Length: 377
Figure 1 (cartoon, rainbow, N blue to C red):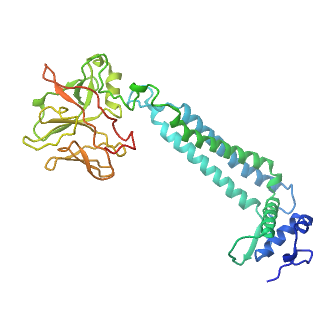
Figure 2 (spheres, rainbow, N blue to C red):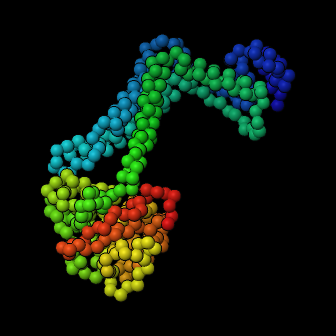
């Protein structure tokens, strides 16, 4: 096929100077010819600019962008300043706390929805009504094709009248800007806090099982009543039994806030397990004395993604995480034997004090949960 530019010259003989002399409309028309595009119909939505109908359409599109910007701003403010820390039912501030997730979800969702509706509305109301037919071609584009396609894009912008739609441009930029800022804050905010700033006492190293000033840390069961302290003795558990326990210090007695925190800390839950008598156990090197007789204590937090690994199969001494089916063999230092988990469950060193209660001898000697992704031991 031989294609000629609007002046009648064969495009194969066009030079950069020839292209410079051509107007944007001529270059755009040449682009359609080079691409084997036949424009069957092209009609602007508003042939006469400045009409009331055109202004109404412009305001309607801008309204959606403004609503998106306002919703994005509301999302940003809620994400940064709305109270998000847990509050128990019936406590002061509970009503505000339970609204955090719905408000974050609704404002973010509406910001996306309004932005999308605004874009679609602009296309429907201002893009020309055009029908074109194009033949498909393969291979790289030459200099003429590259120059003309840029002109075609410029002409498309001119045809859609976006250049003179200042209200739409400003509202769309506001919506996109606020929405982008919200996404940036949501992505960066979790990285702002440095979990290692406390060094040896950093939260990723230390749990509630660590003793402060030599104070004894007991193993406490959860009775459902925050202020009720129920400590555990060896005779309280039958062979093959398992129970979830939490750390308790006498200095916390009567302090419901401290007791609640000890129970709700993400690294606090521990499974106290009493194996059947005579079960052969292989202990982890360096942790041979972490158990007390048939009693073993392991973190309940799966080392894969932090789910509660607490489904106990007594016959096989296996512990199953229900989220992704990781299995840990308790008779071999709770090492993973199936599933995506690659680290053994950390073992808590325990003993029984002179009063006959289970206590922690020390904190865990390794990180709890999926804190260290590179570790596989």
